[in-house]
Image (cartoon, rainbow over all chains, first blue to last red):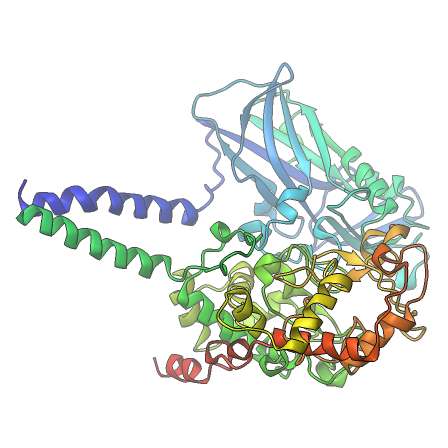
Length: 250
Length: 344
C-alpha cells in the first residue's frame, strides 16, 4: 500500500464520522410545506370557540357578559406518535414543539413518513416528560430563552395562558396559568390520543374557551407552582383539544 | 516499514486532533465514585470551559450589570459568600439563604439548599432570575451577550456558532463549574499515603468517623441527602427547606447535607449562615439539637463530646482545606482571556 493510500484508508472513515456527527447535531428542522408526499402535516390551532386566536387581536366575548382577552398562550406538544389499531407504527424523533399563539408558524408540524405508513390515530404529550425535564440545558424549542422553563420548581412549563376576564376577581381582572411539574404527585404531563380522519392533513384545535369555562377562571385565576390545582387544570387543558374533521377551521 | 511509520504518524496526528477537538477530559480522582453528570451531553472542551469561566465572573448576567456569579461565590472562600450569613445581591437586596460552596458538582444530583434545581446546567437560571440576586432573565442575558464584541467570538470558539442561545450559555457555565474539583487537601494526601495526620488530627478523624461521617460521607464529605439537623426554626425566615419543593410534610425542615471540604474557608455555616465558627457548629450538635418528627435519626440521641474532642475534630476538619483549589489560577478571574478576546 502506498503512503498516500494508507493515509486515505485511515482518515477517510474518521473524516466522514466527524462530519456525520456534526451534521446530526446541527441539522435544522424541516420547513413546513404543503406537499403531502412522504410527510405528515400536523396543525395545532389555538382557538377561542370558533375563532382563531391571534395574540395581536385576541379579545373575545362569550355569552352576553363574559369578555376575555388572551395575552399569552403557549404550550408544548411532544413525543408525537401515530397509531394503527392501537399500535404505534410511526413516531417523530426529537419530538418537542412549542406552540405559541403569537407565532403562526409554530402551529404547523411536519413529520417525515418516507414509507407512507398508514395510521388511524395520533398520540402526543401535552408538556415535557420528567426524564427530559431533568436532562439539562437543551436548544431549539426547549431553549430556556423561550420563557417556558422555571428552574426553581416546575422545570418546563407545559402550558402557559395569561390574560384578562371580567369574571376574574383578581387584581386588574388578570389570570395567569403556568402549568407544569415533573415530580410526583404533581406530575402535570398529559397524554392525548385522538382519532385521525384525514391522514394527509391533521388539524387539531385547542379551545381556550373550553379551558377557561371549565377551569372556573372567576375564582381560580393564578396557578404557577406544581400542585394539585396545576394537575387538575392540566387535565382540563387536555380535554380542550379536539380533532377538526375538515380543514375549514384554518 | 515505511507504511508502518506512516501509520504510526497518522494515528498520532489523529490522537492529537481528537484531543484537540474533544478538548478537556474530566479526571475523577482515584477511588472516588463515578460522577453523576452526563458528560456525553455536554462534553468538556477548553474553549467552552474558558467561556463558562468568563460568564461566571461577568456581571452582565445581572439586570444592571453589577452582580456576577462570583459576587456570591468567591474562590478564596471556597466559592461561597465568605463572611455573609445571607448573601446580598442586586441593589444590596438580601436573600434568605447562605450561598452554598461550589465544588465537586459533577457528583451532585440536585442543587440549592432544598434541591429545587434538578440539573447543573439549569442551576444558573435560578440566581439570574431571582429578584434578590441578579433580577434578570435568560432571554435578555442572551441578547446582551450577543450585542457585545467579545462573546459572539467566544461562543463561536466554544460551540462553532456565534449565534448565542440560552442552552449554550448555561452549558458553558456548567462546564466551568464542573472543573471546580477539590481533591488535594491534606486529608487526600493522607489517603494516598503521601502524608500522615498529626496525632490530634488522627484522633479527630476517628471521632469524625464515629459521629459525623454517616451524613458527611467520605470522600465527598456529604451523602447528598436532605436531612433535618435539628436547627431551631429562624422565625424571621421560616424556611421549611425541602418541604417547599415537594410539599411533603416528611420533608419539613430538611436541607441538603453540605460537603465539609474547605470548611475552614466557607464560613459562616448552615443554610442560613447562623454559625460563624466551627466551634458553634459542634456546640449545636452536642447541645442545641431540637427534637422533631423529621429530625435525622443519627441525631435522635445526643452526641457527647468533650471540649478536647471537639478541638480534635476541628483539627481534622482543617485537613480538608485544599489550597491548590482555593488559589488555583485556573479558577480565578479570567483577566487575560477577556483582554485577548477583546483584541481579536
